[in-house]
Image (cartoon, rainbow, N blue to C red; front, top):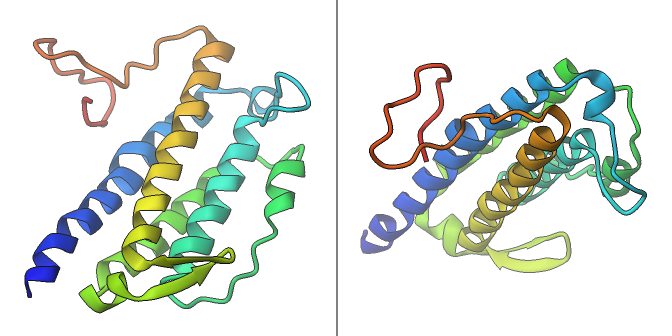
Length: 177
């Protein structure tokens, strides 16, 4: 039982950052961008916002839905980066939302034994805890890239953060971090 007390907060935090922090921010970014901006690349070595969304969808599905949840792994990672559009923003949002919801469903069912068990995901041998942490960290990393690209392409402050002492922002239903 002590193990559960230590792992439950990690799972709750992973679900929180996926579903309530970064997913809404990514969706908001996609809504700010034109279809051309979604697929814009700074250069051949860079990814577009669309590619990053496809990559996050593939990563979350492979590591959580398949790796921890047991669904078949059919990921084609290279296609996430080679796509040039014109997948619509609606399709990108629907795919990412669906995957995050499936992943949160898997996370909510994990037992302490599942979190301690070693899984082979993408040829890595990781515990369920390590896989969960990897996904949350990876998601936040690429969400930051999407936010930066959106700011660069639109020239606007997206108002995702709030300093201590500032009035709470009412314009977005997002946590102030």
